[in-house]
Image (cartoon, rainbow, N blue to C red; front, side, top):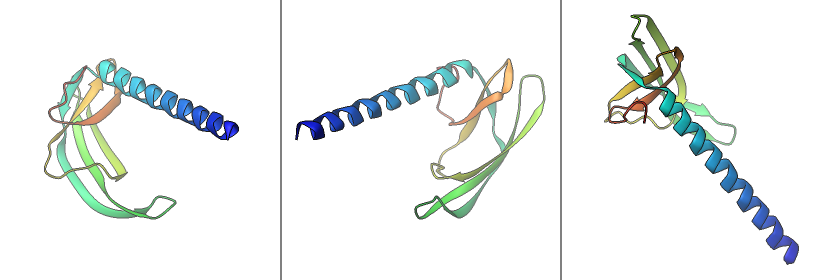
Length: 112
């Protein structure tokens, strides 16, 4: 029984560590991505895909955006399960490296 509790404790500590790391990494991304651009020509195509365990319903997102230097970027994100057609989206990006970008809901404050 004592070994079981030790194993459960280690698994819990590892899970907590991974969660904290992932949250800090996401926060660091958001702080670097201070510029924003509108996602234009936004198309969400419904898809069903195999995730290794079972079939998932999701979308393929296709859109374009223009950075501060007037360069046009086209994006395609496949097998997205978090997309909500009732919400608007925008791109937050790092002005020094426009390839460092992420799609956020429109109410997200870029750089926060």
